[in-house]
Image 1 (cartoon, one colour):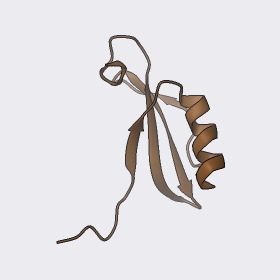
Image 2 (tube, one colour; image 1 turned 90 degrees about the vertical axis):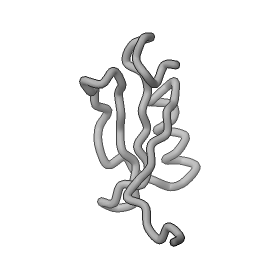
Image 3 (cartoon, one colour; image 1 turned 60 degrees about the vertical axis):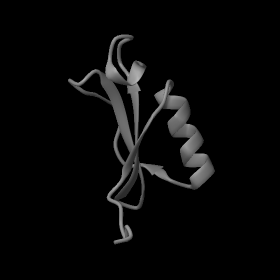
Length: 69
């Protein structure tokens, strides 16, 4: 069965602020959440169209967190 809809997908990046700026300019998305620190060792923000999230950007919050590898 083919995929007909995605809720959103995550992209790991080194620099969260630079990536958010790049994706908003390149794809015309808007930031739907502010940058947030999570307990899982990364920071994230959501980008979307209107109030619908499309992309979650994540970046490591410490050198030993999972997204850092």
